[in-house]
Image (cartoon, rainbow, N blue to C red):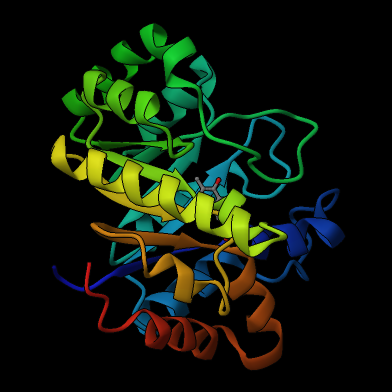
Length: 250
Ligand code: PXP
């Protein structure tokens, strides 16, 4: 197995900016800037930058994504809910990858995987449109066999396994159960030829559990890195996480 790559989700840099400047986006004082943050993450060794464009534009704005597309040297992964508006935006933007996620307005962050078993049919044509445009497609799913199988049937390139239940487990028993589910799903996905990523709730402590999941190619980490960046700076925060990801055995 090769090294475990890190994609940094920089949504919360935009969250902080919007907290002050949502109503005055053209102010000369607008900060912090997601593009500067992305460059620093790349300089610190991130393999990619992830951003989620939400229908309500609560953090990232359309022009952030356009600027990120123009400035990123590594790889841009655009997370989006499956709506016609966002799909059209993605096709115009041409990110390297998209990751389809469920989107409920009330949630604070993405609360669970997309249900491919129930929504599958509608997603097939989107996967094909992305492939025609040269964009790889990831599906953010719960670690369940039927979801992994459905991703393969839809001809997704990547599954991103939702690690939230492991990250938020209150007891060791639940932690073990969730780790088993993630292990099984990762092995199944790898056997089906899918690239296996993981994300949600990964931090500097639970990364030691995440490392026990086999066949991982990439982790997408947002909140914990941006939170740590407030204290130590974003380059240091990224380097610290990369150090904890080293020598992953797969
Ligand atoms: N991966 C996906 C698909 C997500 O939706 C999110 C949250 O936006 C993340 C990764 C990052 O999660 P966190 O901010 O908890 O690290």
